[in-house]
Length: 367
View 1 (cartoon, rainbow, N blue to C red):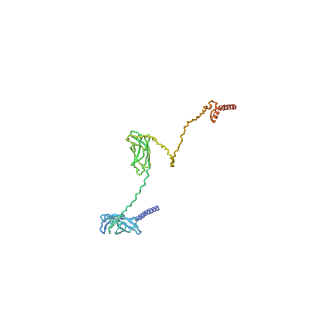
View 2 (view 1 turned 180 degrees about the vertical axis):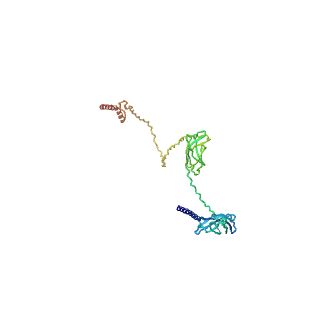
View 3 (view 1 turned 90 degrees about the vertical axis):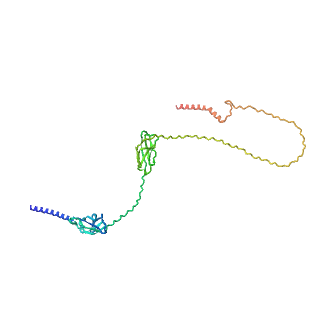
C-alpha cells in the first residue's frame, strides 16, 4: 500500500510540475504593450491640431512594425499603443512620425509593459521641425472616351390578326383597318365577312420604332386597343375595339361612258382627166415657085352628052335553113364528151341488173 501511495504522489507531482512549466513558458511568450502620451510641439510655431501620430519599430532584417495612429487634440496625443507581435522587437528603437511623414526629434527604446506611475500611460513628449506639406494630388486629365455607336438592330415586320369589335354595330362592307407608329402608316388589312381582320403587317423598317406605341384605325377612327412595337412578333387573336365609328359610305366607282367615235366620211377626190397632148403636124413650107406667065389659050366649047345609067341585077339569097334535129333520135350538134355521158346513163341500168344477178347467184352458192 505504501508503494502504491508513493507512485500516486509522484504522478500527481509530475502533472503539477508540467502544468507550471507550460504556464511559465507561455508567460515568457506574452508581449505586453507600451502606451504613450504627451504633448506635441512644432518648432516653427505651427499648430498640429487634427494631425496624427504613429510609432514605428524597425528590426535589423528590415521588418517594420507600425502602430495605429492617434489624433492630436489641443496640442496633445493620448493612448498611442505600441504592441509588436512578438518579443523579437524588444529593445529596438521606437520612432514617432507626424502624419506618417515628419519624424520626431525624440525616440525611445521599446520595453514591454513600460508605463507611468500607477500603471498609467508612459509620458513621452514629442517635437517636430515642421508640419508636413501635403503632397498635391495630381489632377487627372479627363480622357475623352469615344462613344461607341450602337449597331442598330434590324426592325423586322410585326403581324396582327384577330376580331374587330365595334360598339353597337357590325363591320360595314368596304371598311379599312391600318396601323400607325409616328409618321409611319401600314398598308390596310383584309377584313373578312365574320368581322375578323388578318394580314395587318406593321413594318416601319426603323430601329427607332422599338418600344413605341402602335395605334390602330378603322375608317379613320382610332381603336381603344393599342400595342407596343416588338420587332418580328406575331400577334394572333389581337382583338381591336372601336367606339363611335361613323357609318361608312363607300364612294361609288364612276362608270366610264363610251363616247362613239364618228366614222370619217370619205371625200371624193377628183380624178384628173388625161388631156390628150396635141401632136405637132409637120406643115410643109411652101416653096416659092416662079410665077408662070399666063398665055391665053383658046379652048373649044364641048358639046353636052346625055348621061348614061347601068342596071345591076340582085340575085335573091336562099332563106331555107338546114334542119338541126329537133327529134329525140334526130341529128344534134353536141360535143363528144356529152355524147359519151349520155351513152353511159343509158347503159347504167343494164350494168346494175347484171351485177345484181351475179350477187344473188353467189349468195345461193354459198348457202
